[in-house]
Image (cartoon, rainbow, N blue to C red; front, side, top):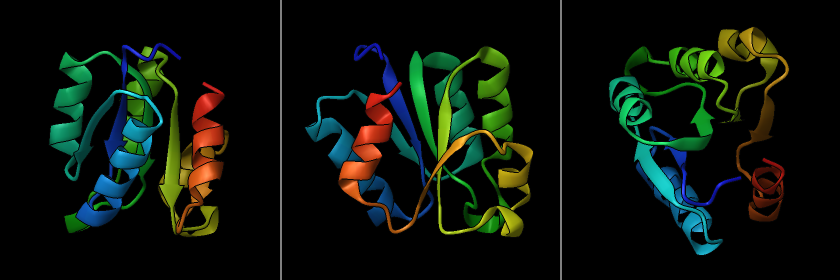
Length: 118
């Protein structure tokens, strides 16, 4: 992964989003976010070089990260999901069955090991 390009973090729960961003920054990654809304994350994708996106599936106010995943997929940008939902409980996870997924609550070492694979 190009450490000069950011890891996009999309998470609607502020504490979790900032914990994730801090974990990545402490590991030496450039972080873009966290963003809680689809429109803000999509703007970041448009204007910032993104090496990887870490997406919470279900965001507040009925939003999901599905449209972000679709845009990233079209651009060839890798993404992974962090979610407390199973594939059976989420249309987004069913739509992207090959995407890597980390269950909430996530283990920091497991998450960083997955990020390092990109």
